[in-house]
Image 1 (cartoon, one colour):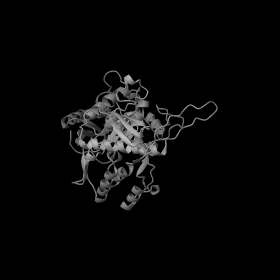
Image 2 (image 1 turned 120 degrees about the vertical axis):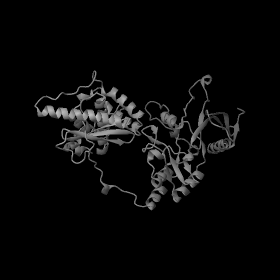
Image 3 (image 1 turned 45 degrees about the vertical axis):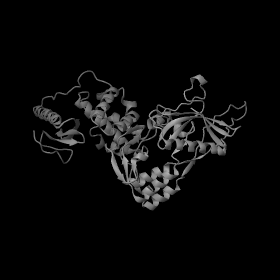
Length: 445
């Protein structure tokens, strides 16, 4: 076996067997020539493991070539044990990738579940043919207008590069399945050289038709054009209308629709001037912004409902340019830092999102009998800086002009402090003014 690196065209003649071993990220990869084509197999935990596989594969190639020269049939390897469904094998494969520390495993899992699981879960690996892939990719690029997702929404077409990533993901699965003895061939191999497939996987993006920001002045103009505040709207219940009349939705009084600081402008500016991806901006906290050293600590990435490490697989520090530093300081001064959130506000409406991001379980107990209530009748979550730290059970006593605080419940692990109490008092006073009440009265509890 030779250690010469295999390079050059895909089609090669002459040498049989041979190959190289190289590191790819946290794993090792074997590369060799077989049937005139360059082959690769990755995912090995060590260099020795990849070298042993390469030696076995090289010996098999030499034996097969000798049998072919003698005109004898070449034995075909068969998968070990009964054929298993791709859906079950995929679960096992993603667990292996997670254990190997593949940094984008959550995104790959989401892409698999969205595009591949509906058509492959019940198939066996060797039942998939290249013509099947051609048909499936065509359906992803140009879906039937009548097709629907599992949630009833219309299936949207995906771009050529996205379809190419789906094919690469499936090919990676087959490489693992072949190594583990669950498949004998990879139907994705060589599919990109098909003219029709290459056309479907090609990007249709045209730089000439895309408006781009060419200077920091363009970035600043767009930043200034985004509204700094938005009006928090309460979802109104629709009352049943008499028969023969249209239902009437009573709008909330203008005095109760208070402007809320819009985080979109500053999030956009951080992304544009610090070079952060949108998924890296969303989970940022003030603790990640070091004003003294003028750096942002990028530690997390939020994508497809999952919080994970950044795309590079590790955190990094990003410098803050002077203009962004000034805007961050100004934005923090504008932000009151504490607000009582309406229980029907968009921030808390998505319960699953709220639990993932804030670790906060939102409960509405208006319709529960009083003995079954844990927090109270009409409870508002309390947002302090970047955390939901408690819940206030409030009652508007318009007869006496008082906002009564029946109880306040701190979340587990929240440390009480003078700053927190002051922020809560200011938030209560601000809410009382919005409701047109004169003062705030807190119970002893």
